[in-house]
Image (cartoon, rainbow, N blue to C red; front, side):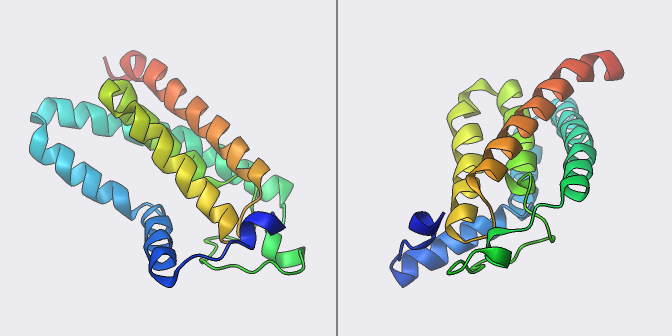
Length: 165
């Protein structure tokens, strides 16, 4: 944690990465939804969007349940030399909601569009690792978020035809 947090980046690179991390707050998915709306026929867009919402509907209760039952403090709260360089959206760190929810959405998209797999894995995991760099998560937060996000996406993919058929 200290080693990664101690990495010093050029100011321009740091600003780009902070912007990337902030897009991971969920706002980036609005742009993706807009793009899919333009590119896909209505019924396909609607089905993909419903499956994404189902994945998030599975992910969020698990996230909040764990977050508020375990109440693991963020690294910058008790580790000397660690500061938060991006805003933490809530008080506790475990599991990483950014990793969990972004992976749930990205994997859901990749399950529908297999050519997206490299991005579906790379973007949420990169966001998670950057949140370690910026002092708001531990590696175990990211790993748990990735596992739970993947499980949410797979569950939604399995449940979707059974619920919406």
